[in-house]
Length: 207
Image (cartoon, rainbow, N blue to C red):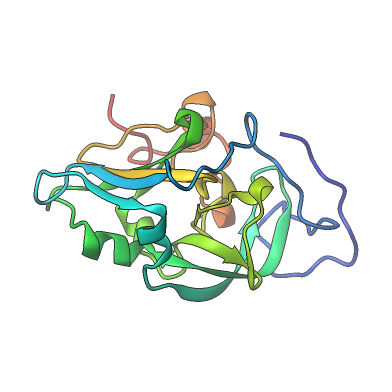
């Protein structure tokens, strides 16, 4: 991950080590996927309450009720984009539509090309966490995750996965793509939880 150039002046209410860059840098692993609405779907699977998989086509998902929230966006490469207005389907709505089993503790968010990020259920249900379709009043661009990305604004942005295709309910935590490659399992920017070597007891998945 590269480090965009900072701009000045910098706000005071940033997490430790963060700065505000010029513009909104584009960072991701691999190519930008092509969106094919007829083939696209969103699935919730794993430890669901019914034991069944839940599925929405693009038309069905795009018709779900959406909410709006304003939040900052903190990238682990140390830039922060303040004051983003996101619009999308909240995590709380997903668990209402596709209830998890009682013993679910985490979710794995899956995206195109098998990319993934694990998130605690408590973070998934926090106000502001949503599957965003719009940013600052406009549809997401392809570079920033169109048609949907999850936004978990209180965590480092690698948890805010682009090009999401599904959610897996987990009864036992396990690491996602970047977490398997040395990044922190929890990713709280206010505690500078950037790397796995910083993990305290209870923050890492069981072996």
